[in-house]
Image 1: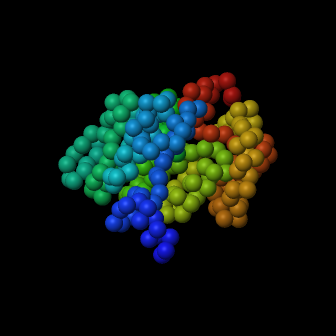
Image 2: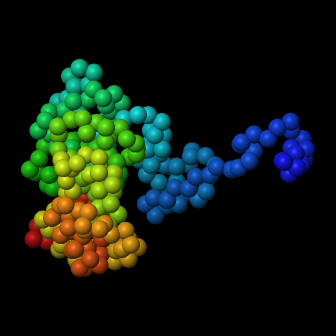
Image 3: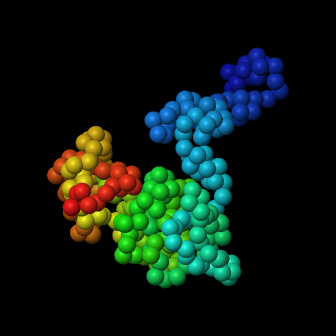
Length: 248
């Protein structure tokens, strides 16, 4: 108390506010660019960091989630028919998600990383067997999970092929959604991990390995074993421009 009174006296103020007690700074590192510590976010996006980062920071004040698609999807929201068909380079933000309804045959594909969400048209070959609606992991809130739990559509998680990516699926999605949640694994995943995987990725995440006894999906168990076998992980961004013809 004496120290507080001394501080107030020296500051020549009647009171000390919370803002006087600390400094809040931000640092954004993306695409090999580093903003350094900043008191404001004004420079985010103008210093080489992606505009997606700035959008995600600002959009966190809203409920709802982002969706994207490369083929139009008929939906309803607030009982009003609407067409989900974002122009390339834009996304649709669903605010009233509680009333957002899509056809039952649509597969919801959750994308972990912003770059893959932006360039879904370059990954169309991966999802030829489903009619997809892509949803973004960001902004991170509970609204997306609430929506998926209350609709009959299946959920397919498209994330990094490493222990961190698997944990995100298990803890953020599978845990809440249940059996209708699956982890997307390309047929050629072992060859991709062997040839293009990153050993640093494996070494920094090996302590995060999901316990196989807690995984009831044989394909996911096989992926975990493949990661261990080659001691490498693979980030999903690799699949954006991959020509699968050369790895078959």
